[in-house]
Length: 474
Image (cartoon, rainbow, N blue to C red):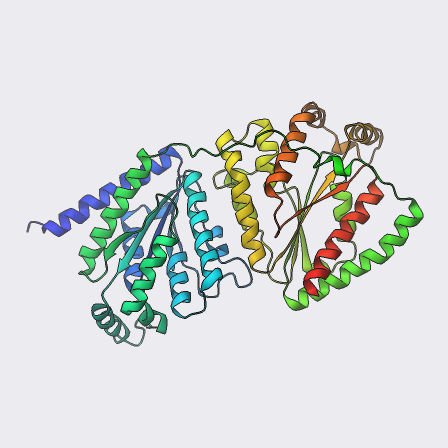
């Protein structure tokens, strides 16, 4: 039996290294995102196929979004969907930087829009890394002459050969490669550089070099698991919730008259938004028994059921716990023309998870910036984001708890957990005021509603959503 070549021995050793790295991911309960970018789309596809052979494919998933994937949603939406659970690997082909470079080469993305895109890429990579996900990026760069030859050969192989696109040729040119090099630097998260590998080498040698770079980076990420330190909020902001302390009331007649106008108006606005492809997100937060459910029922009372979806936010499932806390909201971003209503939301990270100790200090402290970036990505697509905090006094909450216990139709809502949470009123209030102060942004401002009178709160919620939609549609 002939001795294997040095190249084959090296590839066999690499195979074992990658399997060992994969086992460490499982043991350490870390996910990994392997990003394969560059100007050589054919090489990236071939490398992805080889990596699925070297790794145990049962825990590997390929993310290869099409050009129009997630149309009408944030640019990162198709990648949000595929981020790995702990112990799993996502191979990204058709990555966020290559697609950005392609759009810039076409002159479809420049100036402030390009800078905003690069900022969002940096924030996304840093978000993943801070959560413990290994982010490994390999850029396959092939000289123009070699790449043109390879593309011609691939295209001419047979009737089902590789389809060469104008974008392939744009990034093959020297100007395209120079542009990509600049964007690689500007769009990379802190301490998350691209590893450049020559795509012009013979296929097995190229894959070996890329695989070694991946193995090295996975090993480095395993050793470098220091917690990311985020600055915690300082002293409690004053007056943020006191603005809703006047407790305005609304009598039954005034309430009925207002609802008779507002509900049909909201129905008309949502139908017009559907026609124009305008997506809307409404978030309702507030203390227990603040009336969020009642407000949601009135919001949806005259909306076409085909245009909206209500998402309650219970405790995360095991699948959700295995991923970044935003993942379960990333995959609920509404399509163009649709309305998503969240009964509690991503703010749980800086509210209940902070107060109950479910999130470490560093995790909830950095979540403010992560949430602001997420909402900025929603807003930059033109999406309407309405955030409502329904305020409630401690005295009124107790009255509602007691009323629920006495009502056979509402008794099921009460648990010992409600009274236990009530004992942490001051902690929850501090967390709420920190949250509102740090996540009130021009593109997604908070609207604080006095909730001691349910009728007033429901009318105020309807008015806020109608106003936001009307302003955007106008």
